[in-house]
Image 1 (tube, protein in one colour):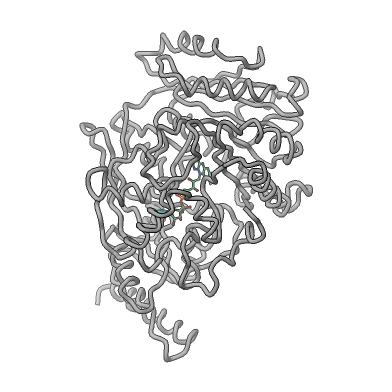
Image 2 (cartoon, rainbow, N blue to C red):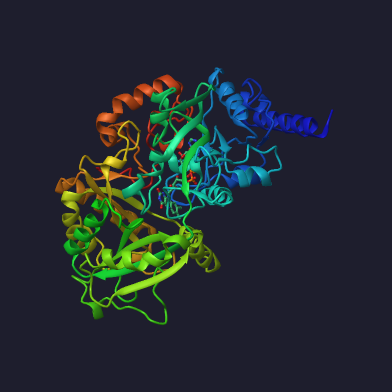
Amino acid sequence: MNPKMASKFLLITFAICKLIVAVGFNAPPSPFLLVDVDGHVSDHPSDVAAVSSDFGMLTPPEPPTAVLRPASADDVARLLRASYGSAAAFPVSARGHGHSINGQAKAGKNGVVVEMGRREIISGAGRNPPEPEVSAEGMHVDVWGGELWIDVLKKTLEYGLAPKSWTDYLYLTVGGTISNAGISGQAFHHGPQISNVLELDVVTGKGEVMKCSEEENSELFHGVLGGLGQLGIITRARIALEPSPQRVRWIRVLYSNFSVFTRDQEQLISLHGPPKFDYVEGFVIVDEGLINNWRSSFFSPRNPVKISALGGDGGVLYCLEVTKNYDESSADTVDQEMEQLMKKLNFIPGSVFTTDLPYVDFLDRVHKAELKLRSKNLWEVPHPWLNLFVPKSRIGDFDRGVFKGILGNKTSGPILIYPMNKDKWDERSSAVIPEEEVFYLVALLRSALSDGDETQRLEYLEDQNRRILRFCEESGIEAKQYLPHYVTQEQWMRHFGDKWERFSHLKAEYDPRHILATGQKVFPNPYLASFGSLSSLSASATW
Ligand code: FAD
């Protein structure tokens, strides 16, 4: 017997013994233990512990029965077939980089987590999934579903190319972001990342490997994009590319008046250009004192900006953030174009902060903040984040009720706010957005501290999230959650609205036994005693 087979045999024997001890002699062993894969299956306590929690740290750690680090789509298919074909089916969840907030990538204690992240697979010493493959001619790249966006970028830059649509942070996986949408300041122009996917390989809940695109299995293709991992595990994605810019001119300006701020943002995203900006975002500054936080280290600590000195409206300031990409050939005209665009805006005179940096450094900006927070032990703390898409017509009411009301001059983290154009989203995808042509992302990215004052505690921030959702509900603001978190089927049906029927029909077709991504709690989980009783955040919420 070769060493690989011997270790697999030992693992299987060990796991069966454990199971017999745990459940008695009459229960059959879980079929996943007998699945033969080229990658690596483990129930080692350190492996299952490593996938038992997530970035949010809001749900209790929940080690699965085992972890699969697949070497290929076939490994994923073997595991899913073993579950689907068995009388004792078990839940299977893909885990990208575990950056979910509410346990969405968990599989429960009877389940198997498929660790898709290439970096984790390699460190697990299994055989490795396919490397990214760039087609300079086709202007696309084929990547493994667990590839980090930072690694996609590094590979495509070797060809002078880059994806068009991003997230603010690149240590997220392709499969994880396109199961949601993938948004950043480029979305107003290029659409979310899901609007820039050309083709997918998906392993369904029946264990079939299916290629899909606009032309082939198109229902599955659109259903999987924004589909919260419910219809299949994405093992390959073909992402559209463009020539990579070399540098970025990055400007921030301040506003004290919310309607002036949003009018300017909306004007910028409506331009058909050139000239037009390549990226439009913004954030709200409600904390008294300095503007700096981990998302905006841009303002020099030696030259701090005080809200009070700038006459913030009700103690609140708004920062517009825009960039223009350029390279050697356009270096001469970038200043002129920026000036032309800036002239249209009505920010506080003298509040212009400019910097210039390589394109890669701009895209990877949040990672620098991560390293700083890690060095102060402030990264691995609970993150009661709330992300909402708010229709343009009600964003002023949201400002009055939330930024100037519920938040009460305290945030415990950055608050992003930027508008997007609905026509850049494909309505056939499973992603859920408001009805209006323009809507805003409002992202409250908070960190909870156990030793801070009351307003920094987890319970306080979670309560604030509930109050914000209740405020929207009671004021008739038809906001949609991004990275949604609900626990009852009624809530999910309301969230999906008109899309629910199609989505549940696709679920019945591609994952009829509800094996996949049970951590999302979208469909009744047959492997849990009581569906819908697990959430700490929303059990008592009425939204
Ligand atoms: P996970 O959290 O591991 O998984 C998320 C869900 O997708 C789970 O249900 C999982 O089962 C499923 N899944 C994972 N991989 C696959 C796959 N291959 N096939 C099918 N299903 C899969 N989002 C934005 O849009 N824009 C941002 O700017 C942004 N910035 C962020 C910054 C930080 C610091 C963090 C922590 C998150 C940010 N996010 C942002 C949110 C991010 O998109 C989500 O956390 C998303 O879940 C991706 O994370 P992940 O790759 O770690 O996936």
